[in-house]
Structure formats: structure tokens, C-alpha cells
Length: 136
Ligand code: NI
Image (cartoon, rainbow, N blue to C red; front, side, top):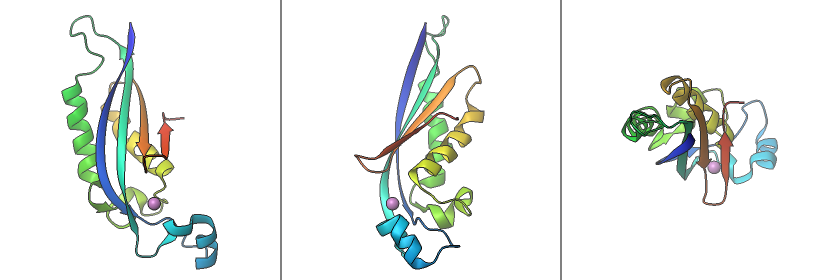
């Protein structure tokens, strides 16, 4: 029996979307308000989905306490109340779009979760906009 378990998490962070090799007008055209030089914030909602066999021994796919602590340590402590562009090394040369944040989150969690379990993450940047990434 295969099941998917999901854990929700949350962080607040600031960012600016821009390319240093484009002029302000080009950045404004492509990124609009997200190119605000003084940054702007989002309340990010993260859902981490783990799919795998239900252990006959424990009845779990993964111990949710372990998953909760992993997300807290690897994601919330690294991103919450941070300026993604300035404070988080992964975004030094990577535009912190919801897509790229999703990839960074996935890459941080993937090595910490047993390889027989599938990982998929969904990141809501606003209540209406989300990205799903599963490592492809
Ligand atoms: Ni934004």
C-alpha cells in the first residue's frame, strides 16, 4: 500500500525579482512590481508531500515528527524573516521566483529523506499562486 502524507509549513520572506544584466526598464517590463528595488514580502505557504509504502511495522510512510523537524531546521530557520536575495546564499545568483524557491527547497530536503520515498513540494507565494516541483 502506497500513500502520500503532507506537512504544511509557513515562512515570511522578502525578495526582489530582477536581473543585474538588464536595465531598470527591461526589469520593470518583465518583473513589474516584483522589481521594486526596496524589496517586498510574501507570506509563503509550503506543503511537503512524501509518497511511499506504508510501513507494516509502524503504519507510517514517514514519521511526521521527523518531517516536521526537518522542515523547521532546513527551511523555516533558513528562510523565515529573511531577505531571500541578501540573506540566503542559494539566491546570491539565482532569481528568487516561486519556481526557483521551490527547487531550492526540494534540493535541501531531498538528501534528508530516504531515497525510496518520493518527494514533491508545493509552494504558495500568494493564496492564488503556487508552484509544484518534484525534482524533474
Ligand atoms: Ni514577489
